[in-house]
Length: 125
Image 1 (cartoon, rainbow, N blue to C red):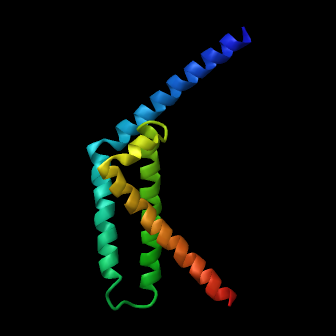
Image 2: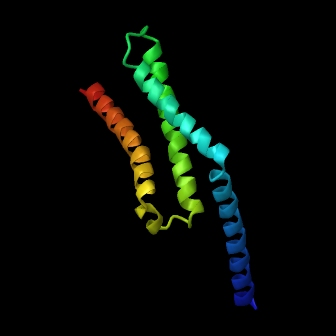
Image 3: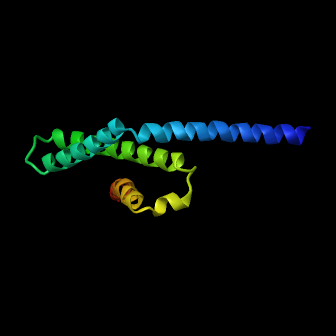
């Protein structure tokens, strides 16, 4: 009886998990969500362009923080899409557009991590 209850619990957990994943996938696939993502991409491009101008010294750190925040938003979006597409299956990552998304998510976070580590090492010296 205990095994049967455990099997039924696992089956119902899968149904809930699948239903949750489908809801997230449906939300992320809506045109308004796609437009919001595209708007964030354009905002990132604009911030990067503005950051190349001669600006008062207090503005570049604000732009840098905004870019970091947007990178985190892209990372959350990427991992939610990956989870919703099949609970983190590696096969999902092999799609061409997903590879581009992965590069867009991983590279800025990697550069951020490397910059922080370099700053930490520099401060130690």
